Structures are given as structure tokens and as C-alpha cells.
Length: 183
Image (cartoon, rainbow, N blue to C red; front, side):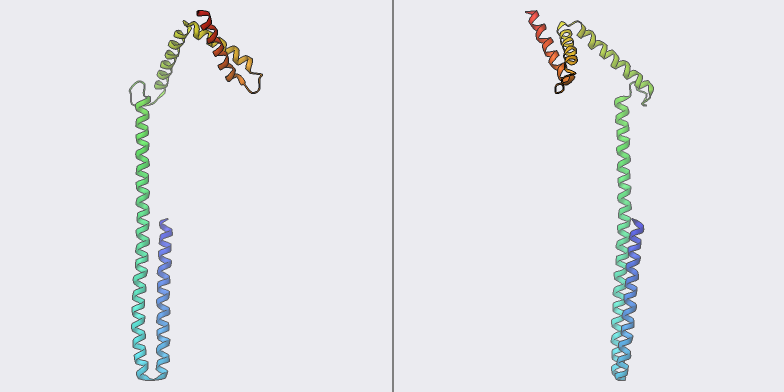
């Protein structure tokens, strides 16, 4: 982008210089015509043409410098914006890494490694075992699980129902039959 801005500024500067050269040429032509008409008129025409030419050249040169300065300032602003964006992205990455390490580090060594995965797996396994032991002692849960398994198997060949809906229906039937037996 910086190269593009420099190219635009250089192009504008060249256009300003070319316009100044054309104005100088036109002033010289006007002076030559006035010289043919008479010496005093020619001198005045040349003086006016030179003054106008000098003023226009200075104005165009100032405008060209302004365009060049503006293009350079825009380039610098783009570089600063890219630097800020990079800093923000880097900060977000560091924050995400810190949060992830804080949440997932199982052995408090400040690193996420295989030991953390092993510890997390052991904790999950212990949790599943504890839930399974609680459920295994409950007749209602056993009847619901049995009904869900039977419902899923029966619903597999049925096109619109499917095994998930069959499992839900079977679990409901298992719960209802368990509750009726308790009465």
C-alpha cells in the first residue's frame, strides 16, 4: 500500500511539473505574439505572462507538494494502523493462551501437556464410574435404559422414527412400567 501511495504522489508531482512547463511555453508564445505587435506592448505582455507563469508554477508546485505530503501521511497512518492491529492480535492470542492454560492445566505446572490430558481422562473416568454406580442401584434407571435399548432396536427399520426417537419412546415406556410396578 505504501508503494501505491508513493506511486500516486510521484504521478501527481509529474503532472504538476508538466502543467508548469506548458504554462511557461504559453507565456513565451504570448510574448512572441505581443513582440510582433509592438515593442512596448510586447514588453508589458511579456511581463504579465512571466508574472502569471511564475505564480501558476508556484501554486502548482505547492499543490503537488501538498498532494505528496498527504499521500505520505496516509501511508504512515496505514502503517500505524497495521502495527496497532498486530499488537491487538498478539494481545488476544496471549490472553487466550493464558486463559486456556489456567482452565485446562490439571497439575498446576503452567503448561498444557500429556500429563494434563492423562489427569483429565482419569477425572472424567472417575466421574462416569460414580454416576454409573449411582444409576446401577436405581430400578427406575435400569428400566428406562432397558426400554431405551429395546425402543432403539425396534425403531431402526422404521424410516421416519429412527433409533433416537425409538430410544426416547422406549425409555418413556420403561419409566411408566417401573412406576406402575411400584404401586
